[in-house]
Image (tube, rainbow, N blue to C red; front, side, top):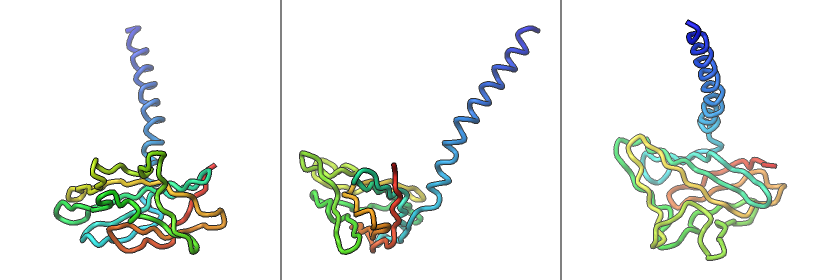
Length: 162
C-alpha cells in the first residue's frame, strides 16, 4: 500500500506536466486559426492564408498556408525553372523580391533540383510556404503580397519582432 500514494503522485505530476506543455502547443493553432490576410487563388478551391508577417533586423519573414477546400487534390505552381521572383511583395512604391543567399538561392521554401516548386495538396489538406524578404522601412505597416498562383493579397499587416 505504501507504493500506491507515490503512484498517484507520479500520475498527478505527469498529468500536470502534460497539461503545462499542451497549453502552449494548443494555443499556437488558435493564433494561426485567424490569418493576418487571406485570398482565394486562381486554382479553384484553394485559399492562401498569410499566417506570419514578421519584421526583425531588416528582414520580413512571410509564411502562407495554402488550404485546399475542393473535393480533389490540387497542384500549385509557385516557381518554375528557377523563377522564384514571381512571388514578391510591394510596400509604398517599392517591389521586394525574395532574399538570395551567397550562392544565389532564394531564402524560401526550397525548389527541386530544376528550380520547380509545385506542391500537391490533398483534398481538404493544407501546405505551408515561407520566404524572407528585405523588410520595408519602419514607417510601412502593411504591404501587398503577390503570389504566382493568384490575385494580390492586399493590406497584409507587418508585425514587429524584437
